[in-house]
Length: 142
Image (cartoon, rainbow, N blue to C red; front, side, top):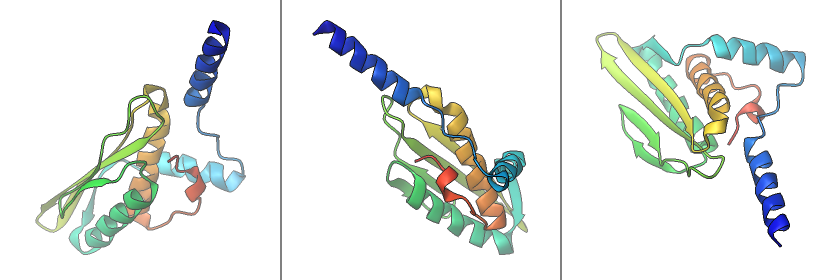
């Protein structure tokens, strides 16, 4: 019985630690390389910042593992992910100043083995906010 418990624990650990699959097609690879260059801290002119903020809200509502906790003109946050599960939460802030808005995008995972995946999710979100393009939504880990 103890061996079964150990085997199940190892299986759970292996599944929980599995990395997000890499992009498969050349277009997906190029997309991931591009989005990883997009800073998660960026500024946009206020006239386009409104649309970017709307995209952030849409993205987090669709792809976050947890429900939205805070939605305002200055912050979008989800509930914190469970530490023992592979769940992703988001925190996006907006500071309006003069003619532009400054954004900070964060994605975090309760399971510390998935920090790189959370970082990639944050870059995908930041790129989506800036460009409005999300050609490969299956690359976002939920």
